[in-house]
Image (cartoon, rainbow, N blue to C red):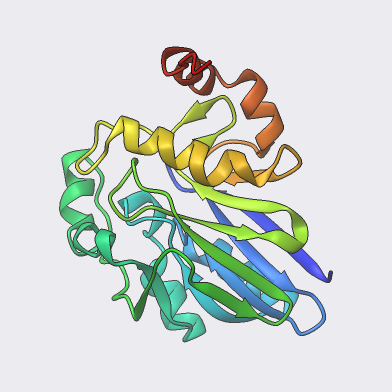
Length: 221
């Protein structure tokens, strides 16, 4: 498949933004316009992409800091899950709580939910509802490349924090095991922070996953 994925760690929190492109049609999707809009747009312009969709895995401020200028520059619609719209509207206030001055985020143009399919050229992203880190967190699965964009649900060696408003640890773990782990060991995990990993690597060595399995194991024989 003619798919190219650009990984851009951006901003003070090095939040990963992904530009996913069909290299035949030069159409693209931006996932998590995290920060430093000029760097995102430089990739778009250099490669000659036409951005058709801007998607957020969730609305924590570090994932949407560049959403407004990127939307204005590309004229692409910006979408996220409805349950995270309140956090989007208060992103500046939440950022201020952490001593960060954040620009106003883009106004969302629509929502996604479990089962929503985003099709742009050869790109077909399936939306999985994966709450726990935030109430409206979603992950996007690109089956043709065996890739999942997991946002702040699952990381290399870690999981999303659950001490923020709307976070819930058991919900997060059920999201990871019921939605992501079942994809299969060969799937690449493109997360919201840090390096890429695989489902297989995390299933075998992620201490949070192993602890959850140990503490929730039951003998049903």
